[in-house]
Each structure stands twice: as C-alpha cells, then as structure tokens.
Length: 262
Image (cartoon, rainbow, N blue to C red; front, side, top):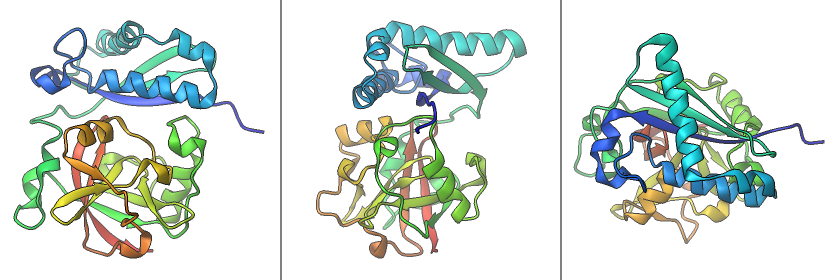
C-alpha cells in the first residue's frame, strides 16, 4: 500500500528576481522564481494523481499569498533574510502550506549559465562546477518521477548508490544522474539536465519519465535548450568529462561535468 504523500514544488524568493521582466507574473514584477509555472505544474500533478479537491482549491492568489506568508513568517521570527528556498506542499484535500529556508542571494540572472558554450567559454564564469556521477542501476519511470511529491525514495536510492548524502546538500556541488529501464537519461536527483550536442543543449524528452521541471519548461520555451526527440541521451553515450547543464526552480542554471560512470 502506498504511504501517504503530498505534492511538492520548490521555488525561490529573491529580491533580484523582480528586476527581470521574464520573471513577471500576472501581478507584475515578482520576487518568486517562475511562480506561474509552479502553479501550472501543481495543477497538472493534481490531474495525474486524480486529486480533484486539491485542484479545485488551487489559485494563483492563494499560492502567492501562501509563499509570501512563509517569507514574512520567517522574517518575523529571525528578522533576517533576502533570499529563501520556498518549499510548497499540497495535500489531497487541498491543504496548501509553504516553508522558507534561507539561501544565498542571487548576484546575476539565474538563467545565464544556459548560454555556456563548452567549445569556447570558461565554465568558471558561471560559478563552481558540479561533479555528476552516473547511477549504477536504472530508476524505472513512474507517476512519482513524472510528478514531484514527498515520495522521494527513487532519488534517495540513487544518491545512496553513488555514495552521496541523503538528503543531498546543494552546497556540496555533487549530484547523481539517473536513467530509466531503457537506459535513457532522465534527470539528476535534484535538477533537470541537458547535454551539449551539435552546438546546443539537449534535454531528455518528457517521454523518458523525467520530471517536467518549471525551469526546464521556461528554457524550452525560450530556445535555450532542446528536447531529445531521437533518444541520443543514453547511459552508453555519457562519458567522463561531458559537460552538463543543471537547472531547477530554486537554484536556476548551473554547470556540471560527468565525474565517472559507476
């Protein structure tokens, strides 16, 4: 029997985000990263899970006020903070909660690493480079890879096999690359991924069972990355030294490199 779980989405609150027009929401400049996209993904997840009551409760205004309350509540208690990871939870009955955890403020556009060209650029211009390990076993696609929930065992198991801490600390600059039962690359344990092929970044197709991340959607819509429609991204085609673009709705875009294949 499936243990109780909630739908999950994580965004960033950062004052710098309100200066980027691409991050505006229906109310204008917004300090939450791609909040409209998080709403869309939560709504889509309620459909996949058949949670009609939860879907009926979701609105942009409710999501935004819940996230804002998390920031204001943290500041009231600690009187500090300009940037936060916001963890959003939605129950089957429509209970919506959010919590704030301080993170380092942005210094620049969080999508800028998507312009990195491994053939001509210095990766250090985009920050520290992550070490990416390839999992030693496949992670079959399921409802819990195609939607983000509090059921995280598939990702925790992959980290454990790679000898990485559970939960993974993003400041450690490591992650593990997952692939499905057909050996098609899907994602890393906390990020979507893209690989540099033929002068552009290629990301696994949604058909692999990967999570349809909010920043992944934005990057696809803006032509920064392109979906792998020919199944080029297989475990056998990933080699030590390959460059990886990592991206999620909290950290933005970052650069990684394959460290080894387990």
